[in-house]
Every structure is written in C-alpha cells, then in structure tokens.
Amino acid sequence: MLRKVVIWAIAVVIGSLSALSAIGAISKNKAPDLAMAVVPLNGFAAETVSSNRVKLDIAQNNGNFANVVSDKALRQAKKAFEREPLTPEAVTVIALTTDSNRQRQLIEQAYNLSRREQLVTGWLIVNSAAENNIPSILRYYDSALRTSSSSEPIVLPILAKALENDDFVDPMADFLGNKPPWVESFWLQALATPEAIDNAAELRKATFNRGERNGTEARDSRIIQALIRQQQYVSAEELYDLFTDSKNRKLIIRNGNFASENDYPPIDWQLTMNGQFGASIADGKLKMSAIGGSGGVFARQIIKLPKKLLQLRVALDQAIPSNAHLSLDLACAEKNIAKSNPIKVRLLEKSVISKISNEKSECQYYWLSVVGRSDEGLDGFDLSLDSISLRPIV
Image (tube, rainbow, N blue to C red; front, side, top):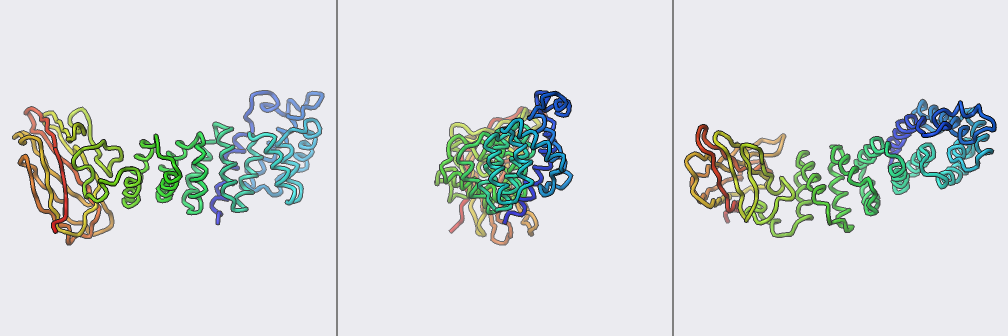
C-alpha cells in the first residue's frame, strides 16, 4: 500500500543523512578523526566516525540499510558504546548487525536517548514504511522536522508527495490536529505539488470537520486558488461552501449584492487593484475607479452555468458617463471541450437586463468578469455596481 512512501522515506535518508554527517559545533563532530587521536578515547567521537561511515554507505546503497555496516564501523561503534553507553547512533550501528527481531527494539531505545540523530530517525521511518504504518511514519518525520531546521526542504516535499496516496489523508488529518509547528509550511508545499491538489482538498475538509476552523482564512483562500489553477472547480466550490454560510450556495453569482468581504477569490470576487485602475467592495457596492486611458478586468469570479436560458440583471448606482466603457463578459473556463463563444453584455444604462443562453454549450464553468476602460485623453471615472444576478428563466 505504501510503496511510494517507502521510496520517499529512502529519499530522505539519502538526502539528509549524507548531507548532515558533518554538522556539529564541537571538535568531536567537526573533526572526529582528530578527536579519536586524543587519549583517553572520546566515545562520542568514535560514535561520529562509525555513524559517518554507515551514512555514506547507506547513501551509496540507494538508501538501503541492509549490509551497510563494515567491520571497521562496527568496531568504532562498540568502542563508542563502551566509553559512552548513551550514544544513540552507536547503538543503532550495532543494532544494524543484529537479527531483525532485535533491531527495532534496540533502535527505538536509541531514539529514546535522542531524537536528533538522523541515522536513528531514518531507520525508523524506513521500517515504519515497510510495515505500512502511516501514523508511525508521521511521528518520526515530525521528530525530524522539530529537531532539525535543515530538514524542512527535504521532509516537506516528501510529505506533500505522499498526499497523492488516498490512504495518507485521514492519518495526516489526525496528525495536523495536534497543530505541529510546521503545519503552515506543509500546506504551502502541498499547494505547490500539483499531483497532490485533489487530496489536499480532501485533507482540508477532514481537518475542518475535526474542528480546525478559526484563523485559517488566508491558508484556505490559497487552497481554493490552487484548486482553481488546476481547474478543480467542484472541489473549490465544496470548500467554499464548507467555509461560508449557506445563503450563497444556490446562487449562480456569489455575493452578487456585494454584502460581504471577498475572502475566497475567485469562487467569490477576485478584485484588481493597481496604480491605474481597480475595484474594492465596500458599503454593499463594487466600487470601480480608473484614470484616463486605463482599464481592464475590475473583478471576476468562477461561476457554474446550468444548461438553461438565463436572465442577467445589473444595477449601477448612477448613470454611466460617456468616457466609461463597461461590460460583463462570460468566457468558458474549461479546457479540452468544445467551447461556446465568449459572451459580452455591454453596460450602457444604470439598469441592464439581458438574456443569456447556455442550453447548447458543453461548457459548465465560466469566468464572469466586470470589464471597463476609460477613454484616452479624458478624465477617468468612479462608478459603483449595486448588484449583479443571473437566474434561470422558468
């Protein structure tokens, strides 16, 4: 079941153990061979020498822990243990030469001595993966992330990649419920992993249902945007409905009366704001401004059109000045289907009513855009939309 996770676990061993073999702040770690020349023998230096040899052999053995302990490495590990019995990596090196029934017990005891040793944690990850024990894998990865700041670039891509596996979702949701310190970094990595987007949405549903609901709006907005980029519109809508109240759920255009903030664009309004033109939602209106000769998409959102004849209603708070050109545009947001032609409804009056048909189109999801431009060489404009609605004609 977890063959891929096993591969990812081995990858972290290759990447982290070989890279971290020389990390340390004192001579027994920086120059263990030099420390070995000092009398009496430094047990910790002997441990480092033995561990470094084994780590190098593991890396050269494609992450495989079998048959990686040379006679010389074993002798150094035994010397280390004789001098310093509380040497976790020396215990692990010795354990690797014992029968499989004793290995787990000894290495778990080494782990209890110190949770900072990558050789110990790496073996436990690989062993847990071989046993299909996802909660155990997560526990040891969590240990690596908490004890080594350099492990995030190695471990988090592995966890995000593992999210492709459906069996990973529920155990990960349970684990994230403990609010590990790396949770936000994990979500950023998951959202940058396209293959994991589907299950990232399922994971967010699971964590939401387990009570994680407050203070996550910025992250949840990024999740929805990632889903939209991958054209996972159904999942994005489901998350939006989960995060918000029910009053918008049966409407084709969400927040069409501009009564609430746009927390989850582009399922609700995605606004443009730059130095030349822009839009904001305030006081129950979509407020738009443009300097002369500027314009573009002021606001847009993804909508789902039924295969019906629809009535579009747009209300502005004032007459449209002659130097302002406004329209409501609909363009298919789906790829690899026979698209209908884009629809453009020009807004020429304070109140606009128009009919739109989606009866013969294969497209369901559309970008609905409020588009405008101010004439070149003239003053700009300030306008407000009071409401936009789109409903089937019964």
